[in-house]
Length: 143
Image 1 (cartoon, helix red, strand yellow):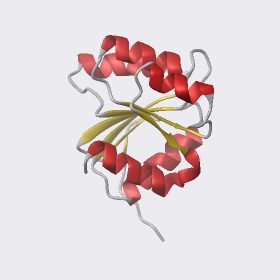
Image 2 (image 1 turned 90 degrees about the vertical axis):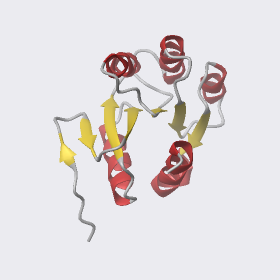
Image 3 (image 1 turned 180 degrees about the vertical axis):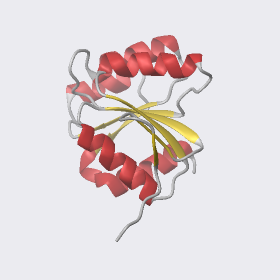
Image 4 (image 1 turned 135 degrees about the vertical axis):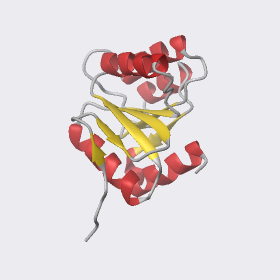
């Protein structure tokens, strides 16, 4: 049995310490699974969550204003309101050095291509699973 030691602050933040990531996905279960696998891998991260594209853009702006620029944004493509590509475009417009990666099952689509065209560094295919996701995150964060 896996025992996790997470410090929870409300529904949208888990602090594991260290680098900062922002997860933008409309499915709470996806957030929970990413957090569990990140913790299981022992990554030293502060995780913030947003559930719509608009919320992701606003959270990125808020984190910047507090001097807590995310080291990486993990962006879903299909979101209520503005989609992941539009949210990425808005984040890049406010911070040209933002590091955004898609994490989606729609990795081979026009939407995924658009995500990289507007400034995302790449797309992590969901079929890699959560262990694969964590390995990609390690590479991105150089941990």
